[in-house]
Image (tube, rainbow, N blue to C red; front, top):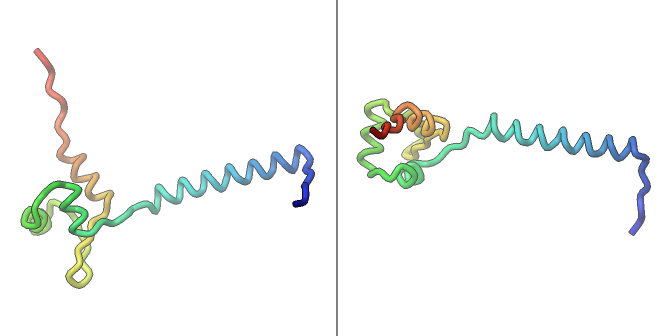
Amino acid sequence: MNAVILTQDQYDEIINRIDEIKTEIKSTTKTSGDEFVDNADFIQLMKISKRTAQAWRDEGVISFSQIGGKIYYRMSDVKSLLDKNQKSAFKKK
């Protein structure tokens, strides 16, 4: 094993580059992190029946993609659906 000696400036540069890479990875993950779930995962996540999922698609409640017989939902669309239907907490009297 060889030891490597760095100057303070070299060390700081390496640390700065590592921080930049971490920031880039986090931002890339968030922006392109528009993950998809298939119909089975969506049904399990929302705790609904297959028929309810079908009705929501037919009524335009949730956007979806279909490839052959396989159906996918964007997680951002699922979150948007939940956000649109959020009700404020009731005030206690």
